[in-house]
Picture 1: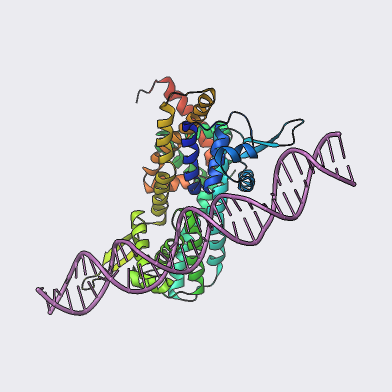
Picture 2: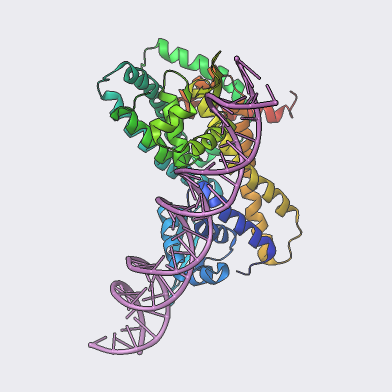
Length: 188
Length: 188
DNA sequence: TTAAAGTTTCAGAAATTACTGAAACTTTAA
DNA sequence: TTAAAGTTTCAGTAATTTCTGAAACTTTAA
């Protein structure tokens, strides 16, 4: 993997963005490099291409594996491990979404569920709990919606993502759909 | 705003989560406190409730205003500024989404657009550009979809968020909808 | 069973980010 | 026009996070 200026600028950008996406700079760079590479890369390839210490590369690869963003290849007669991306770009976007929800939403839901059950001990706490319940309900709905979306086939996801300006009209339909369902009192 | 254990645990949690949501610990705590407070709070209220230096509170409030998450009140005959949340929880979730997209997606789209236009100077760069175009196209679609969703009324957003298990069925409909539209060659 | 080829761990150093507090600044009203 | 009441800025410090590199560990094949 030769680091041309074009590839380098993408990789560096992924590094900067990495931190906003939930991992650190070097992990972002490593992932950027693996995405662009035609052939799977060894830890040493990555270490030398990006001038990142071998130890750090090892930890970064572990992190990327925990996100399920990369997968390992073994070449017969070679003891090295080689890494490439796991699945299509869309599948990877999905993985990132799942992982971020788990890190950003789930802990808050858990906390809110617990606090809401406590008996309020003052006026202020009654109000606070009301607000917390609002947040909880919104996060829970969003969480369920997200789970539902994550469970769609890649084809349905394609449709969804391309939906664009169709969303508004679709929601009019959804409104009807939902009220029908309500009338049927959940005969499902 | 008296800091009961219940309120404190929420505020501290918001602080920890803050960093994942795009701002730092103290800004998260400040926002948590403002959300729970029945009455608008002055910078000094916040500073003393959270033991955060007055200067830091000032910067934090600026940050929250830049996210459009809080708004300022003026009390006649009082020169202090008082802060409360701006709009409903759902409106705030929307603001956070908008701001995060701007920080996390838009810069990448800009970069990718530029790089894709460059002439590839090797085999490797041809492949790299293919990958970059895939990412670009996905991000662009997601960005448009997000813009569309952001432009919905609060009521439509409510519908959307409550959609839950309806998503799958709705997408079957969307598939038909889209192919009709394609056949009409965009007579809109 | 050994040594070569590789990976992982982790203590400490480096880099980055966040926070304080005092000084500078702004606004208001008398 | 001044001083009181408030806000903002920012240099320096503290806290946190990331990174390195050497040592420990693991695996394989001869």
